[in-house]
Image 1 (cartoon, rainbow, N blue to C red):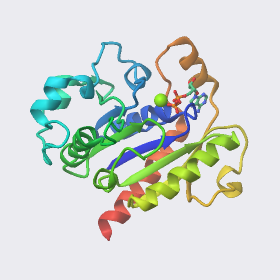
Image 2: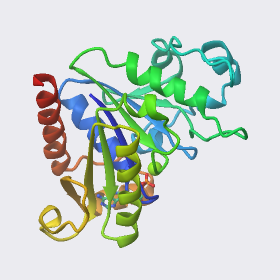
Image 3: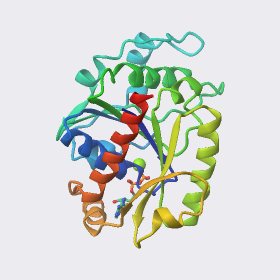
Image 4: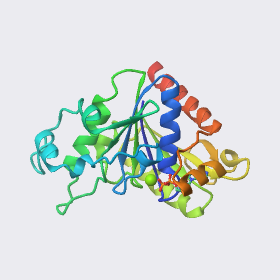
Length: 246
Ligand SMILES: Nc1ncnc2c1ncn2[C@@H]1O[C@H](COP(=O)(O)OP(=O)(O)O)[C@@H](O)[C@H]1O
Ligand SMILES: [Mg+2]
């Protein structure tokens, strides 16, 4: 399964990626979680404290594998990157990509090519999962990369502004051809989130506000698993089965 997680800053993208990655690993998947935020916090959230240099800041590696702007290899070799540049904890391997920013020329090609290759080559069978923690939106993904994503989850919390951001992401993700896009509630305090969701985006479900998660974040403790994350993971597996049956 190739999953990407987007949404307004602070809604809980990184937390959701970490919770779902762990749920996937516990279900026997080989999981690679890719941090594509320019301010990477995923490794720390998963309890990994070794410093990981963002791959996109490794100019030599980028030049060797992907080439430079205007001269990008379409199919760079990436299979060894997890081993060489990643770190593992609780069955989840983390790769820090760094932010995919359009450069001065407005081209995010090398970064996009690398992510596209990761999506394409790190997932070879049904028991492998890549989950990408995106910066916020999908505007830097590029069409070819976006189409490599099976499911995009757009995280929303109870702040209305996160809904506005989600709707923009949803529109754009349809334009660039991401096949399945769902809203996922996070930090939800009451019942009925899915039934009362005001937006147009189909809703996958919701994760509650968790004191334990909030405290772990505040104190820099390992993120606790919350039972609702299992339910969300199972729903994603059902979606994948439907996809395979098609
Ligand atoms: N379900 C939750 N319950 C309580 N606090 C949460 C939950 N999800 C995220 N948080 C807290 O919200 C803050 C932002 O979460 P984070 O995952 O870093 O968001 P983002 O990656 O979208 O910027 C963190 O302090 C985190 O601990
Ligand atoms: Mg984050």
